Amino acid sequence: MKMNPRCTYCLLSRVHFQSKLSTDDEDLISKTIKECLEVVTKHYSPEAVSASVATKVHRKCYEVLGDNDPYEVTKKLINQAALKVLPVAKEKIYENSPDNGELFRRAVLASVVANYFDFGIMGFDASEDKFEAAFRKYFEHGLDVDDTPEMLGLMQDVVYIADNCGEILFDTLVFDIIKKLGGKITLVVRGGPILTDVTLEEVREFQIDKKVDRILTTGSNAVGVLIEEAPAELLQAMKDATLIISKGMANYETLSEHNFGPIAYMLLTKCECVAEDLGLEQGLSVAKLLNYP
Image (cartoon, rainbow, N blue to C red; front, top):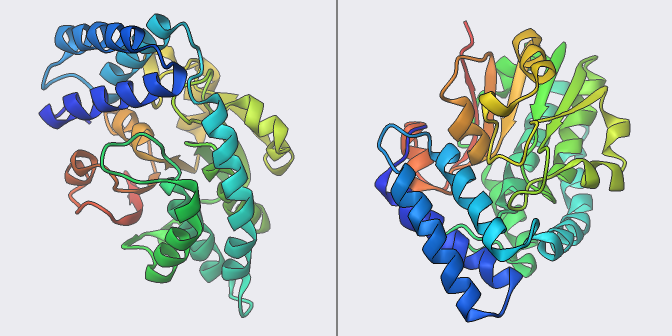
């Protein structure tokens, strides 16, 4: 996905948000915003990939703050909130003993709804105390774009590219169904801390490694999956996969620039620009399969 003019002020809004998470020093916050603004000015272009520019901006932000993980405390709170709602999700998924197709659709829905766990997006309230109510509301509404029936026949070798902390716990509900259907799972997480994205640290903390066949990283702390920074092993896994599942908007922003497939984008369209690029409205629950014959 290419950069939109609206990305600029949204990106700087997030820089301000995470700077305040990191420090109370207003001079340092001002310095951080100024230097990040210079990065935006240097790299902004209608032809630039939005997440690639975001990566440069966030790396500069972390560098100026002297903080390699401003969201460290926030991620722990997100995980706590997720653990509280996870039993609700399991109950909803398995209610009335659905068949495999319906089980998978419900698990995907729960996983998509959990994409709500994203702090710092301008105009989007992901506060912990509102998550259970939001989960129930979105789950009741269902998927606005539902390509899960087509995905069902592609489960043999799945590359699952994760997004946020908290959300990853709901992804495990999808893992359970994929394994039930006889599929193999390669889980992909960030190679280092960026935003609220899940890393190997959280995977090990919650023993998620026991639910999948293999774990790879994106090779860096880039926003999304920057192909130029991705390990050869990951690129090969994506080429060999019968299905790639891409969670969240940042992964969409980077992977939509390439022709990997079949690829299922599973996300909430929290961002107007991402929604438009997908040809959808803002605020929808999406499981959209692309590059599938």
